[in-house]
Image (tube, rainbow, N blue to C red):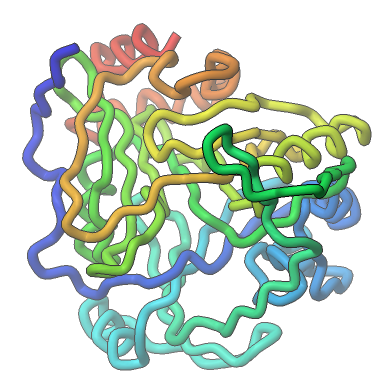
Length: 358
């Protein structure tokens, strides 16, 4: 199959990024029911580290810092997310570049951070110095017997249904109507670099996967992915599990408790990870994944054709409802406003996206 031609020139690393972030730290949401949110996320595999009448904080595992904050509110809403940067000096550089001040305080632990808003209004917090990790996982990763190199001799394995042991918050996917503006903001402000992009027959990108620039240190294929749609929205968040068996046992646990399955199990094409998606009580998608690709900074960006079939190598084809927006009067008004506001958003492009993704 021929490699598609990319029709834009802005999908590249910034030659002079403000800083280079070093870790995806956490997500922030608003939810009307903290108890319900906690039940789902606990069954999903996260661990509650603090709860009050107004706030809920969860960690990936007992040995890590919090990665998920929910504030009680009348409405369910995605607020934003936080990254770490390498030093207080980097944080000061970012603050100066964006005419912001460094906030210092305590949120379960002391912090120094700069708070920005991306072009979509999402809150992006950058924190100095990552918290130390001492993973408190319930077991070691499975030892696998391959046909030509068995490693588990005279031993059996059991993986009963249980919440998936989670290693870390791995990535998130956001949707935007202003694609070029958003891509340029993340590459310039945070120093993210593109790993892969999927394009329409016209060569226009509709989803690009970005990783952190850690130089010669391998890092996940993507820490954030940006999809071109008609509105700004949260698509999903992904959490790395201990191994593939943790995904399967976790799926059984979630099914037994009546939570809503969204898509999987399968293996993605871009990033290569084995995946399984679940919807929280408010419809937000949460992914378990394992065995994903890692790249160094010098790995070149890939370009491929976008399609629903290109979302997975094997397993269930992506259901149409996984990315299909709910059509309401409010979303129609948003569509019209964004068509007027963003020059890179057209009815023709939206029709082409709908065609290739269904």
